[in-house]
Length: 130
Image (tube, rainbow, N blue to C red):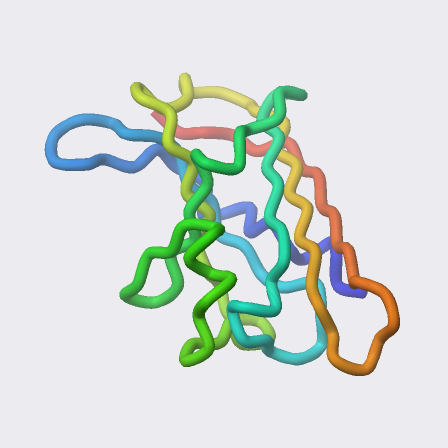
């Protein structure tokens, strides 16, 4: 529904753990007109430069909390609100090189009144600053 707004173009960067670049992250929104409990986000997939990222390397940072994808399945006390920017973090030692990168994001959501999952997909080419 709101697929073209899923990837936030201005929130693309490498991130550090201590003094070491541990991977990259980007801002993301839900492709839905309402917020959802995190347990209702069934799947998040990331592809960078046409290479799929293993799900075990993906985390979601929402406000002040970090979740692995399996942890999100059991989160019943936190919600990702409509329009709210969360950060999808990808563990990749050394991060990404500066320059343009093709980024694809897929989110599969469980909506209580739909008999099928809602799947949103956004693809953008973003510039990683030096």
